[in-house]
Length: 251
Ligand code: ADP
Ligand code: MG
Image (tube, rainbow, N blue to C red; front, side, top):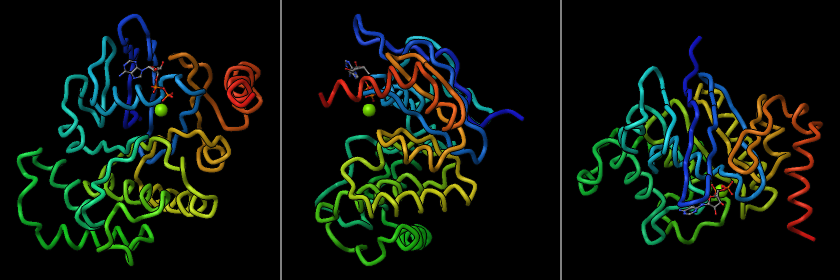
């Protein structure tokens, strides 16, 4: 069976720096895949390439049978590929529900649709997703008043508004307390159980190991290893590159 997402030879340079160095990555329908690697290994840049936020220097990306290599971000969102950002992007002065409404309008019709009145079906989807993400009681609160973990959940909700087939999540647990991390893991399992494929960039390796059957490891822009969480955690090169770098950062 053809995968939902199939990217081949993704190359992205920033001047003299090769941030993503010919990476192949694949996500099957309904699959949950982890993407890990030390800081600066190219995870976010690869997400930017896949979601078409950034131009790539070479490579190809196919999503759900469509070549999206030259698509714009709102076009891939419409095809069912949605994402969150490492640096949270919510409008702090708007309510939780208003943030949800804006995300769908953008993916449907581009920025021109931002000021349309919200239709009842959208309002229903906002309310049911907020319930599902444990944010029902926060519906009319200012997004800026949410906790770090609640804001991550809101971002996941915003990514789900367009009824995606795949969501790319960039560090959904960073700045989140351990209780909320467990809530996020639980909600991601529930999202995945609904058939939504997830590609998960994470700093928290245990979180990835608990959720994913397959993990891809990047190091210096290139794929270092790929396999089950157990294979990855026992892989000598991964231990050296990933955990070696971690140890280097703290000491
Ligand atoms: P990760 O998400 O794995 O921490 P990034 O994708 O953010 O890694 O960064 C990969 C490399 O690309 C790093 O060396 C980073 O400094 C560099 N980089 C990322 N974005 C830019 C940019 N807009 N301009 C120049 N260099 C960048
Ligand atoms: Mg990053």
